[in-house]
Length: 142
Image (cartoon, rainbow, N blue to C red):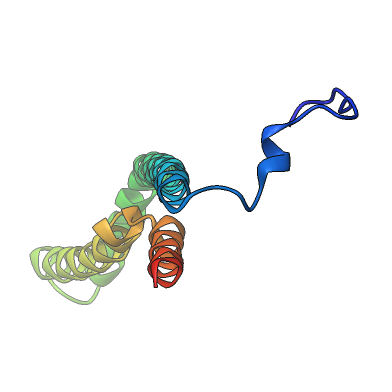
């Protein structure tokens, strides 16, 4: 609708409401549904882009944190190994610390994988909206 005021006595398309034929109504509904689904697709694309961006940021944060922590972890593990070496042979203390470090690392990797799982890329809001729109269209056609 434009911002121009209506001229009295002149016919406007909006004034013809209620006089459309059934084929016109069906055509208008088809056009509206096409526009609606196009916008829903745009929303889904935007949601997937946002999820990808979030995953990229999470991966960068994990990599940066892992690189920084690696140096500290190496020295802490070395200190623990030397501490245990006071009671056990050095090779046994190294083996114990290595096995514990492997287990903790495995748990951390599995926890991080959940943050970048394929489920994070499902455009949930757009899918819900499309379902609602399809149901509304089905009801309107009845």
